[in-house]
Amino acid sequence: MNKKIGIIYSMLLLVLCSCHNELAPLSGRDIREGVPVQFTVECPQYDMQTTRSITDKREFKTGDVIHVSAVFKLDKEGESEKQYATLTLTEEGWVNETDFPMNWPWNAVNATFTAYYLEKWNGPITDNTPLKPVVLDRFVYQTTEENNPDPLKAEVADVKNGHAVHLKFRHLCTRLTIEDIGDEEEYWLKYKTFLGEENSQVLLNACQLTLQDNTLKFEFVHEESDKVSAQVFTNEENGKRTVTFHLAPDNYSTFMLRRRNDYPYITISQVDKLNKLEANKEYVISLENLTGNIHPDDSDDEWWNDRDPEIPDYKDFKIQDFLNALQQCEQDYICNTKKGDPITVLKKDEYRKEMHLMTDVDFEYGTFQSVELPNTVTFDGGGKSILGVAHPLFSTLYGTVKELDIENAKIDSKDSGIKTEWGILARECDGGIISNVNLINSELKVTIPQTTNDPAYNIGALIGWVKSGNISNIQLVDNISVTVDSQDENSYYILSVGGVIGQFNGTLMKMSNLTGGSVIHVTNSSQGHSTRYTGGVIGHL
Image (cartoon, rainbow, N blue to C red; front, side):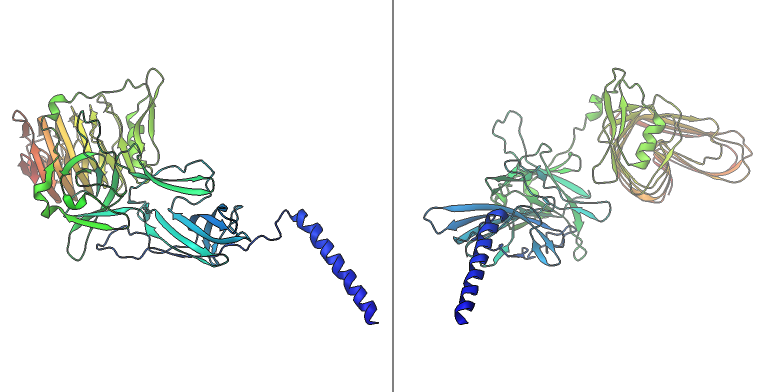
């Protein structure tokens, strides 16, 4: 009986071995293949010296992706195997959800692992095809969304076969925090270049990841914008305004700080403590302590003498479409030239509710309806000009207008009708921000109609009534003229007339009349039973 049982067991064992040997080739797997590599991950420690509006990476969250390359040392002398995979953080931990396995070779002795993380690098990399460079700009857009490129790296060597791998990440950027910064919301850092200098320092303002032969290669590279931008944060504890840049490790002893969109601010030079900034470290400087190292980069005081607006030969430019696109702030406004070439007049910012004026435009004193500028929208003139305005651009300005020239405007309202606020830029400003706007060789004429309803009129060359808001760096060039008269000497009304603003209830800083020959003419010849306020700059405070 025992002999029969032994024979049966032998036959079963033979069948099982045969099946195993037949199935192994069909599966396409090496029966000696090792187990998947297991990972644990740790973010850099939060050890910053300053508080920021946009923080560095503190912890990984569900959906984050890391890229890992491994070099497995095999038991044969000098032989190795390279593998690459991406891992995604799920509720179960770090999981390889791609077709690129990362397993311990059965004959591996140990291995070295290198991993990278960047928020935008969220998919597998094709071999020998670099990912698109990511610029190191940091800002908040759409109120809550952050653009915060903070490349991280982890490297661990001599991990024994089958052991879990602990990836402890560190920052690849150096961090430069500048305190006591100016009033702008954002600044750009650029290297100082000199005319004719062949060996000017190149700013490595972006980062890039490449996969070559299952090996990851990270590098800082130069991107054509040639700058790194960051937003300003006000520390509630001490009131200091600070800006923090993420930068490639390098020499930053001399650099330029520019206002947003490359407008001049200052050059910081020969600061020895910044000549070798290292990765994963933070450096803090205060402008108040660097007065001997700071040089203002003011724009040319004679810029208006060289102004010669270049108006494209438009075929289909329409004022109302232009203003509607500006108000809606959803997409570019593109026209065609008479030659049929497309030209972008207004460009929508990729991340922000912001429209950029890309060319000078001439309204040619055409008619249009004023539009509101919403409080979420910024109109950046980029130093370009709007010419030939014959009507207030905005009815109510809730948003932001900056870096804009308004030239040769001429508004002549012989019958103002029911409209009581008059200004070339806007009828009224309610909580808006207006900065670095130049009004050049412009005039406003308003006639008060017959009325007995005692309305209040507010008339100024730039804005009729500033109910609230911040106005700064307004420059007046050539002749600015405001003229007001009335139809009926028996009318009842209240009138505030100013050379720049009719009635003002906001905050005003830095207004100047640039040229010695520039004149502001304010003429108020209105009659009637009225209370009248007249001022060379502001009519009524």
